[in-house]
Length: 214
Ligand code: GDP
Image (cartoon, rainbow, N blue to C red; front, side, top):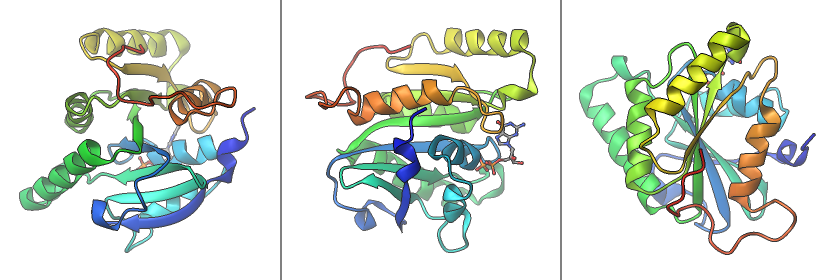
């Protein structure tokens, strides 16, 4: 059981990169279409009941919500909009700010993308995947709510998503359940790797390389 992530504490929120903490150390961002279970997944991974509620507090539903693990490591919650319901101009602004963050944030070493496994690869998910490919940023997909399906159908979905994304580089996929919980150790192993927390010494070059991790 990895207890490192239980240290996560709310740090700050920022509407754009300008208000973000110094671009040092390493951070991993979390994204997901609303209701996919992003807040629940963040809470399960950090073993805290209400960590990500911070990002749903009125006034804090900004682009970037930062949580510190220690002085050099952060988790970042990226609240999306319920895409269908926002005006085109707001959508466009969000997309530009997101592209800016994915492209320019040097300490960003990977994105955890949370999907409801009963509705994977939504247009939101596709947009995030394409943005990360463009920025050569590794993505790890949590197919959440795996407790809602029997093991056979859940595995079928996992394999279908892997097949669909076989052309993408640096994309990996796993089954996950925030409520069970299921898949927490597997997700922690990816976070450890990206954040350079495995067996002590961080690797020299984190994140943005060209190898496939699926
Ligand atoms: P967010 O909008 O992506 O942050 O989603 P939430 O974390 O608020 O979850 C949306 C709903 O899905 C809530 O009712 C959660 O209790 C439920 N939920 C989240 N994860 C799971 C899961 O792994 N299994 C089940 N059965 N329900 C989940």
